[in-house]
Image (cartoon, rainbow, N blue to C red; front, top):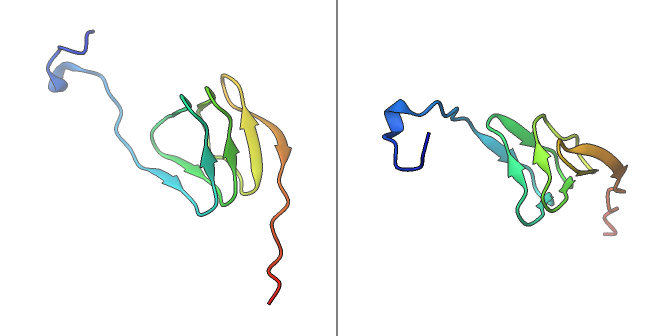
Length: 77
């Protein structure tokens, strides 16, 4: 299949990607359809995300694996 093939002949899955507040996606990361990136999560550059990422988690690699956790900032009012 090439990029020039008509869209109706492609086997492309379409779905939502939800990116919660304070989340960050690094350069050239790939996020598959129907994925939820939790609040404050970080997706490393070049990672391939195949499943939901919990809040305040750092993921890297192909496929994306949990590397660590971030601490949720405390509000000082």
